[in-house]
Length: 170
Image (cartoon, rainbow, N blue to C red):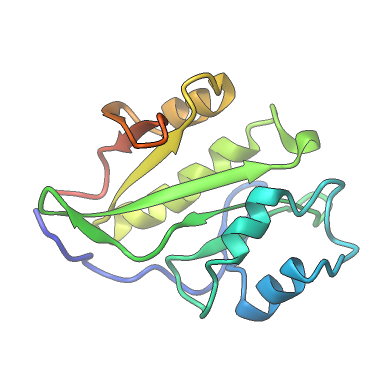
């Protein structure tokens, strides 16, 4: 088991059957924080969590946040990404992921599809993924379970459950 990734995530968009997940550039993050609206934004985007993610973007990094763009209509319906590059946890390279969708995109498998895509990318470079979730967020707990988060690590200082996806190592 390694404390270092075996490779690097791509700077190019990740793609799934229904989604495109491009990295949020520093310029896009600045525009979002400034309240610039784009015709490709779904109703309700950006959410407060999307803006919080944008506040962390200082440079283009594959370990940053990505837009969730629906392929069918090209609308940006949320964001997903890592809270920075991998760090060693118990001797294994690990990252934390966060995600969220506008209300209209929920309940359609979009979060599960996007989360599986970023987790699969992390697996390919030997990085384990964890997520923190409010214990009463049943929808997010289902998304995590469907995406392979099977290990409960306990809770963090905010009382959120910390779940781990055991992929990416070995």
